[in-house]
Image 1 (cartoon, rainbow, N blue to C red):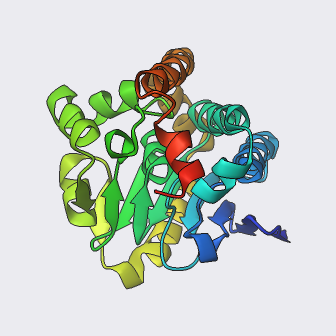
Image 2: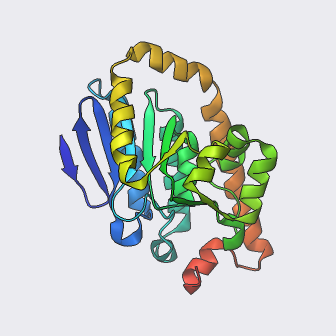
Length: 252
């Protein structure tokens, strides 16, 4: 099966469902429809017995630049919040292995969504960033819960508070990614890892994942709700400023 929907490409290869973000002219930044489309694609894959593994990747020069600020300026920000939550909960509750092969820009939601992925291969020259404090907002997508689990509390605080850039090589060293590989190999390596997982016992993989993530979905949902409330509070303290306001001014 191959789908060429504008914002998401869907392809099945040897038991691997490949989901490719497909807005290369916008560095695969998310619109509200892109969020809900990806969430639906994940739900469909979870229910499809022919799908053993998911592979996430992005078309064009980078994996994902986060939210499309131009779209956010034109649409209801509440719709974006619901879309983010839909994708994250679809990822967090997905019962089968998820592999991501990422390159180029991995920014904002492009980075936070990967906290909910099982195996992440990054191009060594990729550029990761959690830019929320610079944008005048707080953490999103459950990152306030997941990032400390993955890299430790102090490193998570540093990454979230400074909004600094992280190379793909450093991302692997920190544990944000499983491994870093040359950029021209990241997609092929991702496919190899995903296909390797299809040769293993699916029931064992799924139960192993369930054991490691038991109880996380509820905690992630609660973290997202807290983050949404905090983002609103930051906006009020900035006198109507913050992320959505900056987007409407075209300043970010």
